[in-house]
Length: 491
Image (tube, rainbow, N blue to C red):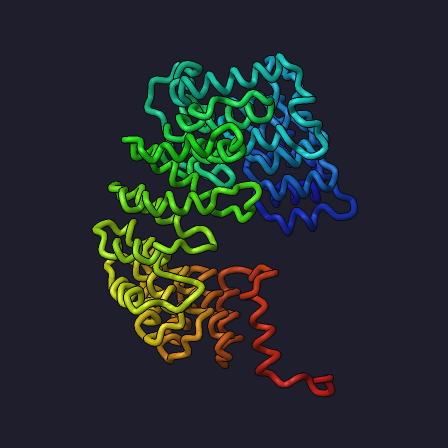
């Protein structure tokens, strides 16, 4: 192993992307191997260093490299739940449909893994034929049967059957692209419990969609709007309006199951985000339905979802303020958190009753309720600005508040030019969080504070300021406003 190869191996192990780029210049060897003969590409993929893997592939690394067990690196990406690396490998020439010695394929292994993001990456990778065209019918049926078996059996139960392990499984919630899913580890193997979403994805790709009621059942099996199965069913039903999906979903509001009602409210909220009245012409009917539903819903979690759905469209429902006032003193904070958006009538000033209710909510015991109410009052140019400004500053001061970062952003961007606001922004420079320091420096720059350059130096003590970022660029803007041009310049 040459010195350059050794340095590349060390950089990959350290996750040092800039050093990897530097070592992939002239005389590069993107197929360098470590002391055990393992290609650095395999090491990068296994370590979930997806950007490094893409850099190596861009420099010409072999996309068919094999790991210590002789498995293709694409299978390493599948096992590591690394969809970006998997997609990059396929773009570079790895075959997701290649039959392996055990009779599986990388795509089949991805289906078994229960990661919808990884399956999607291999189904529709760039430069590949559409999956329904490139895969023969037996292959499609095998993929569907595998996904259905894992879904019906359950991830943990299937792992126990395969490994014979009797110890307790280790389960944690992880991100799978934009959603969340449980990752189950047992007997030395790990899978993700997203087989419902995988099955929904395959059915759509192969033109064999499940009954609409089955999609609902898959969603509520994991009653969480952030779960991959829920999200896949929501999207799947949204694509099947012509088959009666809206009628089925809206009927769920009468179900005794709160999970079914919550799914209906969440689905309607996702429809409200669409501004295309041709693709979805039911906005007005949905808003009327949601307003009537808000009057009748008794479950706090579902009610909060209904209020959220009701406030997501650009057009305000005529009863929205009345609904917000009705629930301003609801005993559950999850409902009260949605009330400020109900009272924020964007096309006209706040009414006296709405302003009074929002003022009371700025004294709520819940951080998020206070913050939301303060933001609406500030955005509405309410005559009493000191109260809501103080709410924002107090949240920024509180190191334990989950709203601290959001409140800091609002304070930095705001017109609050009080001495207290400046002190709060300065205090952010003493935190151990680089982003909070950057927000503090940005807020000082916007206020033309003379300590701005030193503030940005404090940010860089914790790491580089990545660009493009409007908060990073504010330093140059501050210099342009506050420093004289160099002698002989064209200022």
